[in-house]
Length: 295
Image (cartoon, rainbow, N blue to C red; front, top):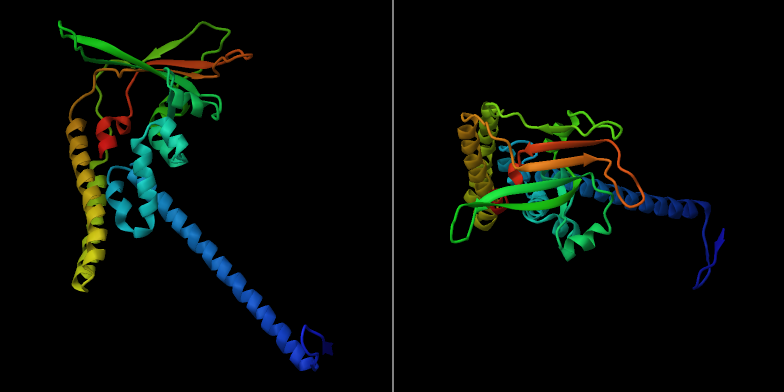
């Protein structure tokens, strides 16, 4: 066989041609294997990052916060989750920090007041699932003191998992019938909390100390500090929240919340409304409080 290239022509026999083709095939196969390995590595890092973000947003219990920084592969997910949990809805959507995990933990809503940033983000959103009215009582700054109500309205594009599970258990009101308004009953009930499971999970996270000790013993002081400080912070926060939950578990809750929710097929321009649910006195998700945002 005669192969003519850019330079001098070469005459190769059948064995040489077979060897060249085999080498080229092996090279292609090797590159394909590297691509597959890189894809698997990226998928594993994304999975670990998603799990770490879920732990950081306390989607799997308070003790999960101590497990979030156990692996360095989840650092990016932890940072994104912390920013996502501490920002408003419009900023979360603008910075692309909104994920299914953040929606399940804290939901997604936009202010209905005169907010140009929220209005800009709203143009690119789907139809809202409902509207929340938040009426809080706060100290008045008038000369008479006392209390006054601060009311805000938000349209909701994703309910947090806790609120969504509550709404799913309530019946819809058909528009052909009279409006049915539901309200939280004012009776004493205890908070559900699996204290033993959370304590065991927190105790198991102490295995991180072995990793820190090994790094320190081998002279990797910088790596030991980078590994220890995030875990120590999340562990102490989780421990504090767990103590608070244990205390609150012993106190009955007999007061309704300050949130009123309308959800269902809401009316809009050119379209009538449909089945809806109206619930008064819903308790606010603790993860949306200022205390959680600071942590």
